Image (cartoon, rainbow, N blue to C red; front, side, top):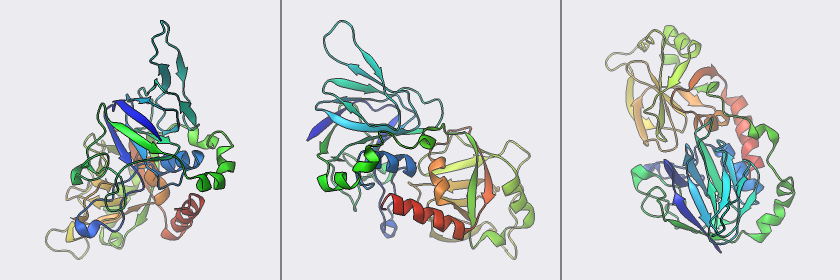
Length: 334
């Protein structure tokens, strides 16, 4: 057993795992990590199951201190972290920490995360498992539902202490080969571009939008609004206002439908034609029409977009995306 002290939670630090499934009927959000790829790779490198929790840190500036030795790893947005000693020595040593590579934080040492140059969310994962109570099968923090985390869905606060259980020895043996590589694959260490194309799978409501609106949806760049959060990404356009969506064979409240369940990555179209991409902490029901849903392999990219980032939608098909998703699930044993 070891313990990790939250010295400074930064802007927002949340305990997140794979989220809650089958709880929408109770009005609860799914929750879970915003960048699943970063989380899963860190857990795999630490020889943990992907279901273990990580600390999701928004825009860095967080500090953590070990009371016992803790093997851990940082993934996601690179915050140029350093380790400092809190010993009484006159000169304090400072050691740089690389993302995507396991390291050990010794007792009395403090891990300091700085501002990421690109990307939005970093993940601190530990070898073993945070000792937290499950709520509906998950420890994921959903602030709006007041559920998960250390207590009642609250973000991590200064002075909080997370206890870490020892890792499962059988699972470690099964994943020893991956961990022996020393670091995650090089392609993961690339920066997170703030201008990129995002794949969209058309929904059954896609054909109800007129051709003019669809052409504009796929041929312009949208900007991520400052009002975006874990519930969803609001998009706007600096170009001429997007055409108000005209719904074929519709009468009143053309953009509205009878409220229905919403999948993660659903792209709702508002009355004014602005898209909203719904994320992990989304509401369970929605009454706007949906152009489609973001492909699974691009959901992690959304979790790293900052306000002001730009995206352009790109049409894809569900058959291709299912193959990609299944391959990911198989590799990480999800």
